[in-house]
Image (cartoon, rainbow, N blue to C red):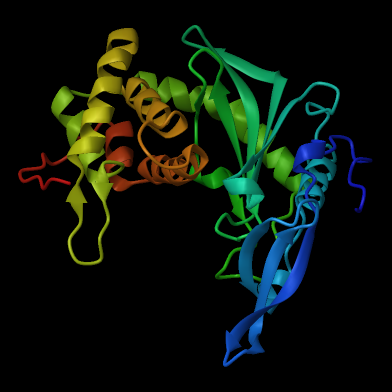
Length: 302
């Protein structure tokens, strides 16, 4: 096994999975025939099957150890505010080792707002089944409620089934931009807190964005999502008032701590993107600029 434990933040040993790649065969008439352009991916430690990939995707697959080293080397090349001696790292395997996540929290990179403390956090994912593209997101995390404040501009994607020849990378420019954006974030939160919003506009915003299930034929509003969001909104509006900061906390809580069936990290990945889309939507921009949304007149159910 190659050693990726010499970087500044080595991967946890249980997550440092190397892989074997074997041709796939089909048996016909008592004979074995190799399936062209397909390889089976196995955990080299225990032989467990992880995925089936095209040969091109398999050739470009980066190990979890390589991915963690790329993050470590890149993160600490760009800013003195981030250093390996002051970071909390959480490595985790998902789906039997077919997927991997790394969360890096920087306690010394923080700000306070509305009696809440925010740390800079790097969320990152990759996989051996390439259902999770190589991806990382810098985002503030509210320490009191553990909400990740996801923002679309802080996301970088690499290898996936659709772009098998690309790999994510992180360099000094990414770190400088992330830290700069983080330092400006209190101004954005202050703008949210000063943007008052009536109840019906909160409902309309959610129905037009994160509660909407997009369908090629007929998009519809999910009653289930609206119930979840409404319950969260009731708590945050009591705490912060009728403003966009409370709305944002509601949305990020929904994204960061999903309920229901399914793999939690899958849901966090999907919902973080939906919240990021919400805050760059025309509906959000209208509200942040103190304009009114058109009230939704007709609702579908899901």
